[in-house]
Image (tube, rainbow, N blue to C red):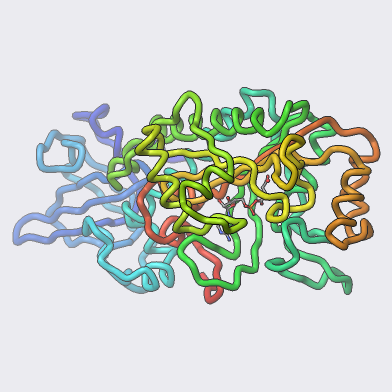
Length: 420
Ligand code: AMO
C-alpha cells in the first residue's frame, strides 16, 4: 500500500513531502504557472506546478511538499509536485464537475450517473443516506435488535398483488419482494427484535417524483409490544439516531446542500386518522399527497414538529396482516409517519394468532395456500408484535430538499430507466 495522505489532512503534514491520489477535478494553466486541483474521497487539494497538466477526471498520484497557501482549498497546497497519471479518461464528462452547480438537467445527470455522481453536490445526498443508514443500524443494535437478510425472490406478494414484478423462477412463477414483511415477522419468533436494510421492488405504473421501481427499505420488527405505540417509540429513536449520525458523519455534505436537519421531538405528535380527515375536511378512506402536506403544515404550526404520526388507518386500506384497533371497529393499529409533507414510514401492530390470519385472508376472499410458508411461524407461537418500514430515498430527499427522489438515488429504476 502506498502511504497516501487524504486531501483533508494536508494541514497535519505542513512542510512534509506527501503523496495524495484522486481525480483531476480542475486544471488551470496560466502563462507561467499551472494549478491542479485533485479530488479524493475527503475533498480537494491543490498542487502548483509549471508543467502541462493531465485532463480533468484523469486519475493521478501527486507527490509534493505541503505549503501554506490561503487561496488553496483547505489553506494548504502541494508545491514542486511529481505527477503520475494512473489512468486517463476516454471522454470528457458531460458537464464541468468543478463548477459549484452541476448545470445539467436531471436526465443528463442520470444518463451519465457514473461520472455525474462525482460532482460534490450530487455525491452529497448519497453521503447523507449512508450516514443515515449507519445511524439506523447503530440505534437498533443498541436496542437489542439483530440485523437480518431475507430473500428478494419470493413466492407470494406481501403488500398487494397490484404492483409486484413477476419473474420466471426455474419455470415457476415467482416475484421480486415488495417488502421483507413476512420474513421479518417470522424472524421475530427467532430474535424478538430484527431489522433489515435492503432493496425492495415495486412495479409502480406511475411516473411520480416520490416513487421508484426499486428503493432501499429500512425495516424493523419487534415482539412483545403492547400495541403500535411501542413500535412508534422505537421508530422515534431510530429517526433521532439517523439524524444524529448525519450531524456526526456527513456534516459537510449537509452544509454543502444547505440542508436543515430537523429536531425530533421527545414525543412525536400523533393524531388519529379520523382527526386527520377532520383537519383536512375529507371523508376519503386514505390520505392524498395534498392532505399529507396540509397535515405536516398543521403539525409544524400547532406542535412545532416536522414529524407527525397518523394512527388508526381504516382496516380496509391496510394489508391483511394488520392488527385491528380493539376499541374502534373498522380502524387499525397501523400508522404512517409524515415528514415535511410526505409519507415517510408505514408501520403498525400485526396479527399474531394463526386463526386471525386465516380469518383475515378469508374476509378478503383469499385462501391460505399462497401464504403457507409464511403462516407457519404463527402456528408455532408468536408474541404480539409490530414494525415499520422507512423509504431511504424519501428520507434523503426530504432532508436535502430534493424535489425528485431520483436526485438522491445513484442509479434510479423507474418506468423508463433501466441503465445505467
Ligand atoms: P409501504 O408499502 O407503505 O409499507 O412502504 C413503506 C415505505 O416505503 C417507501 N416507499 C417507496 N419509496 C420509493 N418508491 C416507492 N415506490 C415506494 N413505495 C413505498 C415509503 C413508505 O412509507 N410492509 C410495509 C411496512 C411495514 O408495515 O412494516 C410496507 O412495505 O417511504
